[in-house]
Image (cartoon, rainbow, N blue to C red; front, top):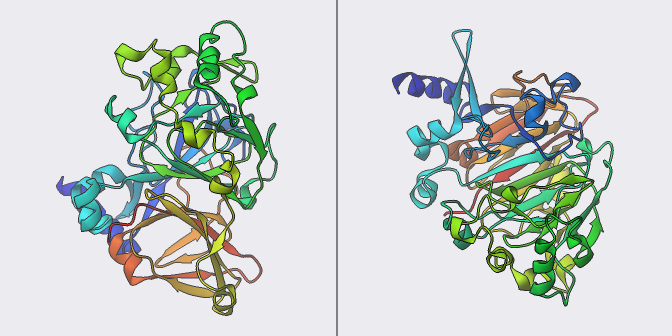
Length: 401
């Protein structure tokens, strides 16, 4: 414990309240990597081919990935990177918050949530994912988990190609009945269950996003997606075959109480029926970036900043662009994570840059966590390029003050 505290103190002093985070990679056995994470081509199966390809990178995560019995003890968890006396060390962000949560995320957040209640990820799949749902808090609590709302934003810098199917199915067609969905579940082992015939797809547009509350069916398309979300990895597929890959029933009921694992009415009760069949679904869930201040004022000061994910009480996200050769001091109300997607410069006392290519297990300089006091005091961000914008995405937890 003493060693961890000493290392954490070193990291906090070196970054003046800003922590460097080590890249966190997550494989998925049911996914095909879209190869836009800047991970080296030789490393997409670094967990072993049997574990599936790496198609996710998690940010500011204190939640373990749920990848079945072979999940590693630290899979999905973020590490703080520390250089102490020329030696590289790592501390789990989760452990550091347990040790010094008031200093890292603030006293109010610790009192209300007992830790850091969100994380973000890059989801990078070549093909679409199955139509699935994330549980709400009430249903998730029955299996000892938390519910999971999530947001989407499609960063232009990381979408050099659209993958095989840059469209996402959301919800269910107005007028769909619960019996229609039950019939699809009954077809699980008999061929394509046809759930997508009950839904509609929307073409995904880089530089925009969506907000998806628990209980809403969605089949994410093949753009690389930045996803702020509640700290949980709970879900249930409703589509049994996606791009000729069969999804086992065990995955449907992994977060269902034992007595309901063959109860189709209970499984359908995971859905928020009103939200799924809402005729105004697009208007309520599609997100265009919103400037945090008048654009003229920000541009005169050398930057632009937008809310890119909003509409949730559990998290939000912003995109910050600092113009070439300019600097800006940004203050926030609470702690937040950062991932740099373009350019290079300084973030407070630390150098940052968007990498070109990353080897598995290699440290980068593109991910940070800004602690409570540092966020409130303000961090000066400098773009050291004379020609290129410095662009970063910032993910926030719930407001607690």
